[in-house]
Image (cartoon, rainbow, N blue to C red; front, top):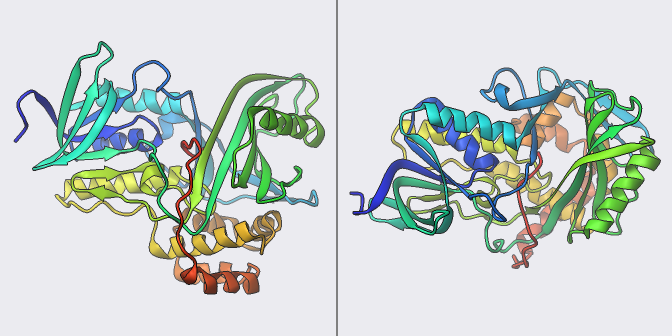
Length: 403
């Protein structure tokens, strides 16, 4: 029963980022539930435009929001040697947050029982018969939403205890160059020709949008974020010294940090479910999130349509166990990060490797990939993990993965 004075939907989705919008899209697409998406109103709580990338084969229902795609990917080793792969039938796809928002908002507006509510969420609670979301509208009036299920994508106030805590943090420039400098057919997934930090690893990331336009990012896997000035200096060095772009104009910037951790993320409290990075959708050892969000969103829609209460986990136990080993090996310095990832692209068929990075390979495929890694340090790390304590870690400002 809906409490007096509360508004009801089958599902309330809190947050209009990649996870929230994707779930609302899949629920609307399948007709699994009536949906209310609660997004922050205009102001400091509303995030800036973001970029998400993922790989997929064939039609996936997001075509309207995809702004660019690439059929060839390149990795530059620390020694400068390039590895170019074509992971057909997979293509690498870019989605801008404004395009996904426009698509999903349009679908919600034209559906029965779908809507977007601009409000500040104050509290989310499980209650008898479902869950409620208490929020404040832009004019200051309070409103309570009631639903059979609530899916909350807001960042956690603190990360759960873990054995390994790293961050994937980055800053990107959308640049326009004075001459044609980019090959629009090839995306640079990891470019390790940048100076490496004392702890962790760093790489450049280039998504060409035209011969004279690209998104260029500097990314680190390490324990602490940098200052804006340090990111800007690293990007300037990468664009001018490594890529040799010459004169350029920075038209837009984006910046973020996401957790890379083997923490066990809580996913459910009664009828309240965590989704996205807050629900453990970020792949611990790589930071990939968007593809896992799509898989989980489709699985949730299917479960609701069948009347099931269990929300599937975004990653399987085997994938998480492998990630915990790799993450610890990177954090301890037992493996050289740039060499590790470059060798994987050299030695493993591209389509299989990308599915492995997304967590969709078979046990047999994973065994073969494991034989292409430095086995001794990986086995040593696997042997010590069960004896390591899980510790809490102060939270840096975290957000959504750009992949």
